Image (cartoon, rainbow, N blue to C red):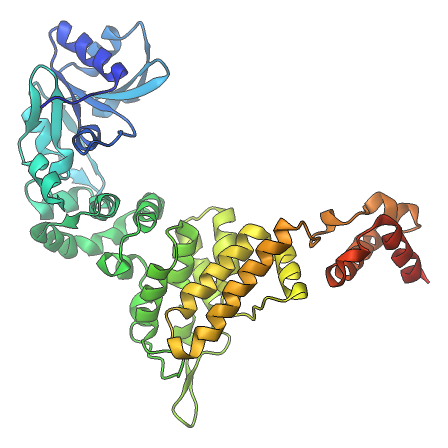
Length: 439
């Protein structure tokens, strides 16, 4: 077969081959080209040593990215391409990295060390496709299959477990049965992996649209979810336990990471807040606040960035609060949350209630959607809901005799007046309101 590869990659391959070295594009770029997708990046594997690579490409910029492991980055036309010497890895330590590597002269051993068959193919125009483990066939079948012994592969580098789900989600593939068995046998090893390595993996998995019921790793990475499945809800609004409800809301929300995490953690506080009344009805008072506190600890543990953490915690705290298509409510909440987060909150409310007893929440769902449309009209019509929308500013307030904190208090008062009646948002009218306020 013939693959149409990037010109900069061709330059590197030709230079190696013209100087007596073997070289191939390898891994993900080969996989994506066979799938007729545009590769995110290109990797090249070669028989040349790192020193020989840097010498051969001295006319270009080269960076000894991972020289210990045989990797040199060659930059051509501002395009970085990683070039790695054929290698065999020694014993892995900490379920993460090899303690040593041995450089090789043939590609076969190099391909044997790779994770999945679809990532263990190499290509150049002279030899064609090298596919020792039927990776192309697995692409056609739509399966993720580990190279050689699954137990050993996942013990070597446990993050490969999440990579399997990432590829399954990205391409809508199925994880092959023996590979899935090996994953489940080694799932506990994910507890040994640094959370900062896990976070980008689950982000891509969550955003792929994969059904959470296929994500067998969830209760390992988020043990509280296991407890949610043992927290039953004898309540007219719910037909499922907290875990089942959580999974349904997760699948209901759009494929945006902070929204997915919000739904995953929005009800974890129910584990701690459940009470049962004399009529055997379950209640979960204050569960939103408790869920927020518990979620904060989880997000801190995973080292979420502050902006994403703020979004998630705000949505969890408010996911069960009142919402209606009314002028004052909508404008105050747009001011409090900002446009993006307010619309996110509506999405959360809808995903949550769509996972409840439909007969009892249909009016809620209509109200949420009406609130969304109301807010869109406010924004489209440029109706004022922020201090910055006022036709008066702090300097104007100062000129009327106010200073310090009083300036801010006056502006907030004026905003409340304008939210109630947008026609008051004229400078002369606002000045008159300030003068009356002063009296």
